[in-house]
Image (cartoon, rainbow, N blue to C red):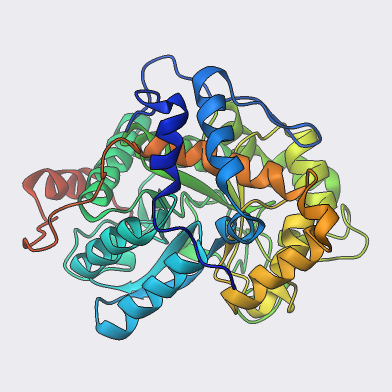
Length: 408
């Protein structure tokens, strides 16, 4: 497989006149470019110029790899760092961090950034704070135990605190909030904010807004709604036996609110919804769910991310299947190198297709745009000094943790 160039591509893009365009954080009044599922991505002004400059430097292999986020345990041992180097050489778009410690996350994040041609996204599945995955980090109550008296302002502050902690260790994406509405016997359980769709929307969106105020991408999940599913999609695909009217009035409500606030990303689960997709494919590989419902009907313009594709609920479907259905980012592929080859075979079947526009282009441009909002290629943009002891248990973190009202 072709390896990435040694000189980071975003630095090469500076030669095309991109200096000064990128910011490490959004400025007041910034808006995202409109993304049309059919026409592609409308990146505006200087950001469009820079994104196009970088995009033109990517090989087909690198474009395919940008859509893949392998899963890695947060351990900074030589074997893990060797795998990180391999992923960087493949040109992956980012990583999802599994259980481990915050110091290892910082080491991995810095290493991948230094070795990658395009700045990566480092994602963490931390629905109620970093302690869900990482040791020696502040503990917050799980979503289901946050009392009804919790306010929108407090949840925003909570999200902003999580973003602060993320920035210290190089994480720039949180796989949360959970916007699923808990139901009777629901597998989602205390991961959900509860049974009330309005409360789930209020708390979840406020938390997401807090994350993004700290320059961390939020990922709402699990579209189109996991609350009515009783099965564990790690083991098998979930089935939503609801009418379209019921889904529309209940499960989709929090996602509509999230979309209305122009937030960043939505995860699509391994849930089949026969009322929308007669083939009952897992939603993460279903065009009726992703392209028709989420993109066109709900008008979502941000990143669409699959749930982990190494879960049994994915039923062995491929990254190329998910991208063809409309997903941008593929989490935890079973084999990163094999999936890159599968994407190339699907979207670049011959030499002529490599010279022409490809449906894959829209997805890669969408990923690049989001990266440009959270990375500054004119700077090294590394996370904390990994030689220092990282202490996230600050008095402010403890204050917010103790301020969150917990139901008895």
